[in-house]
Image (cartoon, rainbow, N blue to C red):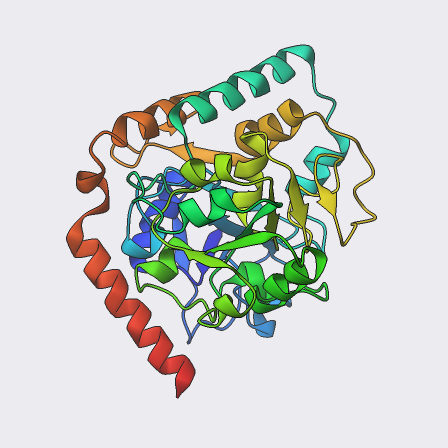
Length: 344
């Protein structure tokens, strides 16, 4: 039997569409699981110890790398989720199915060709995880371009997100990252890009003092628009580092994201489990073509990655319909309540 833990009613409905299975939620009053149970756990949720007695198969579920047009925190429907029986893809301290795939999969010439096709499509349509509307002009662009030295982009993340909370390397917060980048590049022009959830008031960034290390803070500018202005990109484990790699930019990883350790990034915290050298086309095909599951949010039908990209590219033409003002307002209210709870 299939069970789930940490899923809202809406997410549980989507889970059944992604898995093609009937899923029973685990309630606070649930006592035990049957032998052979499979439990889907959202993100970093901790399954209560009493449910481990019969050794269920635990599958961790997260948003895919091409998720939606609009923010998940604003309830934009996802087109992709990832399912991992070992861990979370953005944590480097434990193995994952994605890491095993990238470490051991023999890629064929046809698959490398599909990876190149994916890279071309991603660049052409400027696709990303959330595919937000075109960004606004950046007020500090002239200062950045006039700077005679190196120009560095630092990617901020949501402070209480599982991606950051799961980091075990020394540098693990937005402030740590900014301080280390400034120490490495004392004369560079450093721009700090806030996470879109933080800008929208949906989540907390714990980065109000970013100006202590950064020359400018970037808000409301898309990553794809910003990348041409910078010489390199620095990340903890943000997916933006993967997107920057796809765009052809040098990426420096201060933690251990899934795309680090394969010879494509500068890794300040090497991961010994990752011993293979990958081509970018192999990384992209593995991470986008093989690892996630894609489902059309309207029809519930399975899609491959190319159909999913075509769907996102077409939906980008009418982002207001995909994002919705109501979802954004509900998301802001939810974010406010979560911040109040954490401050209590």
